Amino acid sequence: MYKLVIYFTKTMAKNVILVLIICFFISCKSDKMANYQKEYLRHVGDIELDSLKDNNNFKTCNGDDKVFQYFNLGNGPVYVGEKSALLRTFQTKYKPVLNKNQNGLIRIRFIVNCEGQAGRFRVLQSDSNFNETKFDEKIVSQLTEITKGIKDWVILYNKNDNPIDYYFYLVFKIDDGKILEILP
Amino acid sequence: MKTLFYLIFALSFSCSYSQPNCEAYRYYYKDTLKYEACKKAEQVEGHYQFSKEYQKILDESIKIDSTFAYAYARKSVAYLKSGDFITWKKLIDKAVKFNPQEYLGHRGYIRFLCFRDYKGAIKDLEKLDSLVNLDASYTLIGKDHLIIAKALCYKSIGEKEKAIEILEMHMNKEDYFVDLYDYLHLGVLYLEQKQYKKALQAFYKQSEDNELAENQFYLALTYKALKMPSNYIEHLKKAKNYILKEEKCFKLI
Image 1 (tube, rainbow over the protein chains, first blue to last red):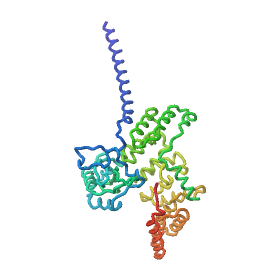
Image 2: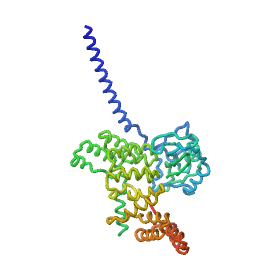
Image 3: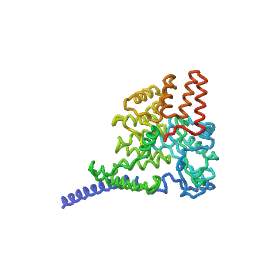
Image 4: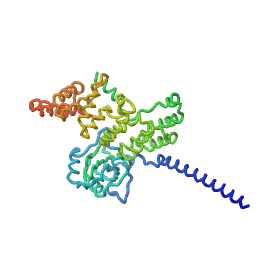
């Protein structure tokens, strides 16, 4: 009787382990699949209104489902006063946070509406190998506030000469806490 | 005639990714899984690459064959264009992992062009060179030959002599096809290294092949360095005329 109990216990334990192993592999595969089966917004990069962090006075003119990308009209990035004006703004206003560990890319993406006003700023941060990271908050907050402080962006027009809303972004290459370059 | 040739040549490489031949997977590679993944990926045609429909179709293609590099590469483009370099890199890394010969050049070129990641670009291009004949490779976007791109990367990290060496070796080959801006790039390097006679030769060759406002500008700078003010002014005026008329200006893509 005792030997029978031991036998069944061992068999059950083996079965339980087998089931656990199978479950583990299934969940791994599901995770792999899940990475590429997420829910998408209308378009990659769309920014939905977040009433807690966005300026509620900023509005798109033509509706959120009609916001273009800045390059959709065949032109490259355009800046009021040319890129040199943008560079001067950051040169004068940004105070470098000198630190050899502060290296990588910071992207600030936003919508420019038909009146040349910008809103819905979103930040993305990576190290020099394009892995997500977090920079010193003093760097990120400065770049965000300076970007938000730019009052006029170029108004783009569609082929019917109607002003459009469009997504735009700035990518800051950070090197030791200093701005090395601003793209695009 | 030359312009027509360049136009046709550039257009043939102007698409971000051309659709692979799915039938090749079926009949040549006997890979039915890749064939099915490829056929699924074909369904993106007609959808905007940023759209969720486009992305979902490619997800389904990856679900059929998780090693189908083309699907990852195509997915990556919208993220790149929206400035999401983190997701772009994850996706293009997959494409490179499963088909390095096809996508290393592209990843390297994007690192150079879009992110000024010169060292990363050099690494990719030299890795590609070890796998295939880099001389036969062209970027899938933009006009620069990958070798020219590699030279420009070396230039950008301060290794100008190395950059000149790469360009000279490449451009002296018997079967070398002059690209639109090659002599301009070479001329600027010579100018920066104070090799003024060679710089002038390169810029005049550029004028013969494909005149540019920038070319006239750098000719002017060379004459300025040579203390020849009348030539300097003459070429500066030419450059200005072209720019004001928006003619003959350097275009990357």
